[in-house]
Length: 94
Image (cartoon, rainbow, N blue to C red; front, side, top):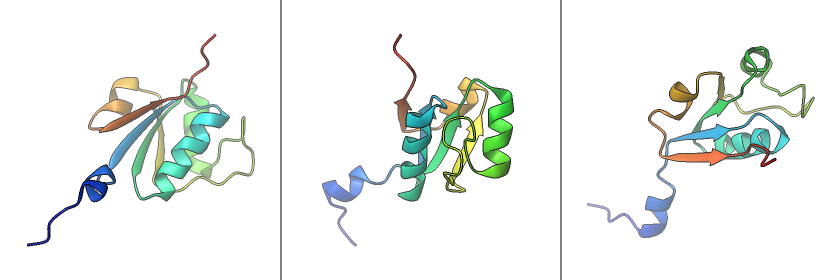
């Protein structure tokens, strides 16, 4: 039986939530997905959720920046964070 190292345990997260649909949240969501995780991307605008899920980009903040298909936008906060091992908060502080 293979022994799992501490370093391998650190990278075993499979579902991550990113709260905040601006440029910072968009990049965090995409990099996380590129590293093999499924990302629940919470955005407050239902219109933006539809655009992200259909076009795989955030045209309001990062037009032309392609998002990994593992990024799934969501408008429902409860659904976005359910079953997530890690939650990134990327919203303005003021």
